[in-house]
Length: 173
Image 1 (cartoon, rainbow, N blue to C red):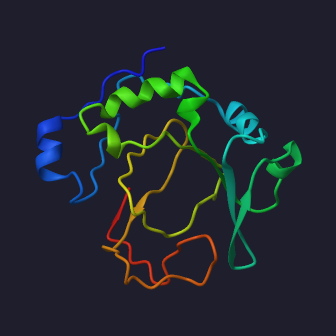
Image 2: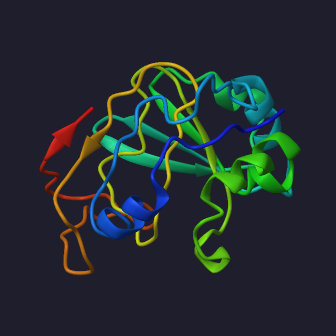
């Protein structure tokens, strides 16, 4: 499987967007087909040696569960999202996606995390302290970009999730 080529002017991206502002590129890879299906991703989350998490929103609270999971863990009565770290270490097809960002310094690229969300699933309003490239493989998703955040941004009280206490949507896709 070839991961294709990213439809991106890399020099312009680095000059205008990198570490400055979000950029949406629709159909960023021509004829993209996700290298893993939901069942394969869930299968990885069953493994003890693979870092995985499920985020769910229940009774007006965000909950975080750590893997490994059992098949029963994927039969929840509320919307949820599965996140699996370092999938590029376990799948050659996913590892092939890394070439898409080979114009960045290698030390800036940690791993390829893959997520799957059921209808209504989310990880909540948050911000990351690192650079993120999101490549949507299947389905329909509403993406919201919020305000600029830093170490002083107010967060909801939670031991492990860094959720914004006052998310202000600036853009929606």
